[in-house]
Image (cartoon, rainbow, N blue to C red; front, side, top):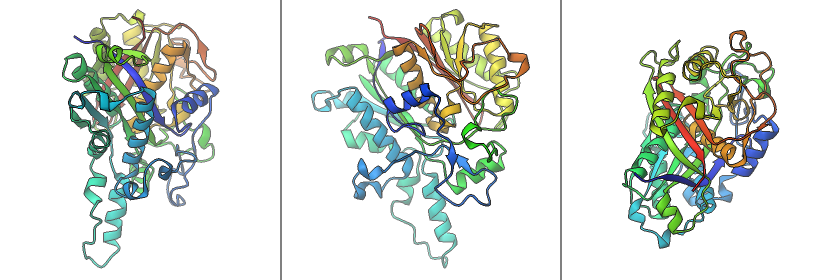
Length: 414
């Protein structure tokens, strides 16, 4: 089977609108969480989120094109543009029948759906829907738009597995390339859920933090005072490529994907299995796929959303896989970015890529008092990054419906 390498990355996040800014702000412990500016939150239980800052899509996309796309597709197009530039791709010189797009989003055009239905409901009953309503809303349109922009005629589809979505997309892309079905796949995920429907819906499911007095520190994974996740938005784009293709075009190689594992909790619509059953199986599957032992992993970017039950179930699963291992570096980078839902896996994969590139573990911020039962069982990388050798990094993502996806990236070595 083909080896699969990463040759480019791009990102839009609440702490930076490109990968260098995102990474530097993460290492500095910057929080991207602040009061919501997009709509009036006076009647909402949660009044804050991780919005993009100083972002204008019209600096990147023509107005005539932007009006056809929901924000989640705009984010996808812009992050992919960054990744393509980073990977130094000249599509004209490549076989575009062998280049695909596997993109993920958990919610698709949620704001488009909200606005169109509200406009209809508040009207006189005449169905005056925007002609772009359906293509703006549907969850697969971003992958289609990306393929059309670059003329890519290979594998093209969208994954949806809630908050495990973009890790699922990465694993699918990894598999298709190593099976020889594609030379290159643009993968990742995007999400634009910060809307009345998004915040109101997650509030109703009792998933969001309501710490409105301290929004910047509301995402506090593993902390005894955590009270729910903090919603974020943005996109992460990753160029996966066969080693043969990368070498043929003298591409910059950032890291290598060596394993992916998927499983299910088979337990509850929105809650994680109390013993972390799916998470345990997903991590084991990723290790087996990569032909690694737990002792080979140097860093784990945990799903750790700052929910009372979710963080505990993941810690239980971690202990089942790794045992008590105080020297194992783990961190919860959602403490900085918030939870980007379907884009979370891609953004956290980029954090893992940077970790193996630079031998540095990004920190968990905001957390002050670790759950007593788990003090000292792992190195939670609190508040400041840690310089250490990082050869293998693992990234966990879990989603509503019990979906589990875990990926492993490796430092690039010939």
